[in-house]
Length: 117
Image (cartoon, rainbow, N blue to C red):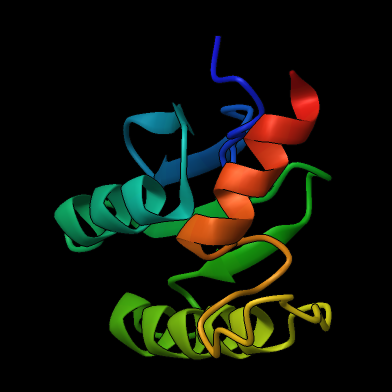
């Protein structure tokens, strides 16, 4: 039991890489993260006709027929950083500049644990 310290991000393993080959057919690989999917595409992009990354909603978010995986990865990482910057405002009672609603400072974590017990 984590006593209230839940992970800030989790994956349900439903990100899929589809490797399409004109001769061998289609191979589908389930991934636990986008990082894993990106690595699989990088490893296989030149040995298949098309490599695709499909999200949880079954939307194709990357296809090697349209762009290089390195370019897509760069844009994906920038967007991920941008979303991490847009965090909910939190007024730390200890005036810590590094205290956020999803990443509390040590004093706020202690207060949170103490109020649970």
